[in-house]
Image (cartoon, rainbow, N blue to C red; front, top):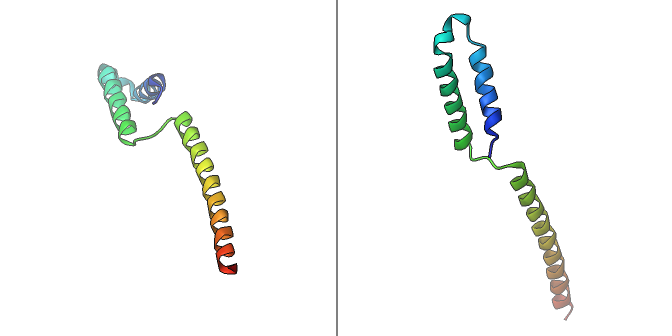
Amino acid sequence: MFDPKKIDEIASRLADSMPPGLDAIRTDLEKNIHAALQGVLNNMDLVTREEFEVQKAVLAKTRQKLETLEQQLQTLEAQMTKE
């Protein structure tokens, strides 16, 4: 779902922003940040842009079909009241 390179880049940037005296724990910190980011993103239950666009198209088609059916129903109801 998420580009692992982007997560690695974010974790690396955060680790790089640590004060110079913490170089000894930089690798562990970077791994922990990476794991935390991955965990948070996985728990968010997000979808990819492609999945979103597909669902958006399906919803638009469904909405159009519903509007057509509602119009047909109104026409039928109008015909029934005339009889």
